[in-house]
Image (spheres, helix red, strand yellow):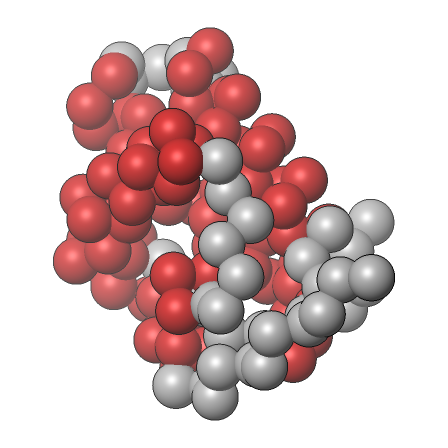
Length: 112
């Protein structure tokens, strides 16, 4: 489904974050609400289409901002809320997300 283990792990991380956010703020049920489900689908699509793939840093530090402004604001809201809680719920994914953020920013790709 994803081009590398690195991107698959990032997809797993973003899914975990969105699930925690939805469970804590929207409802306690297992399935995601419609808004969070839409955000998760959008984030997965953006990861699959990322031009940097395994060599990328975290999306927040990327030179290319491929999220639509409204979706970018939603994902920022999720990250702001869940970020400090990741070490409690998913310590390995949280740690790897921090390590991925230390990667150098990839140079912008010129689009023909």
